[in-house]
Length: 148
Image 1: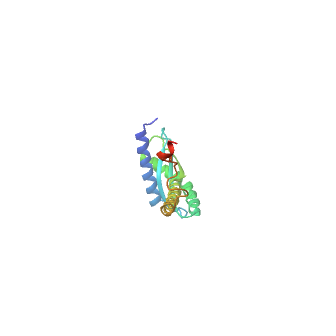
Image 2: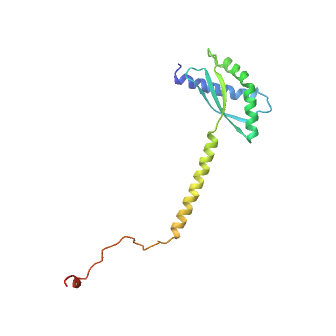
Image 3: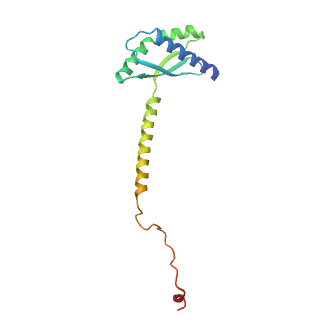
């Protein structure tokens, strides 16, 4: 097993190599506006998972996935050539779902903030359903009544 630092450095290097290759060398028209967001390498440095996002609709995602699958071998060859590691890791492309999750969380937070604002608006102009002081207080007896 390689140490974590070496795996992280290799992952960073793979990210740069693949991003440059996709930008400069790969001319597949199916490849959409693509961003490599993260790369994770296993502890034995044999497998690399590349996370990516695509700007566009669902068809852009499908087309980009097909284009990445077709150029994976060329990208792996270039990674092996530029990194010089003994065993070139296999490359697996995985759509990154973090931006979608972040977007849905932001939408939920916005809805919660709107609901909080609505509740505070109602509370500001609201009145109590019962008495202002809902607690029972013992009535003070007159001193004349207590001696009878």
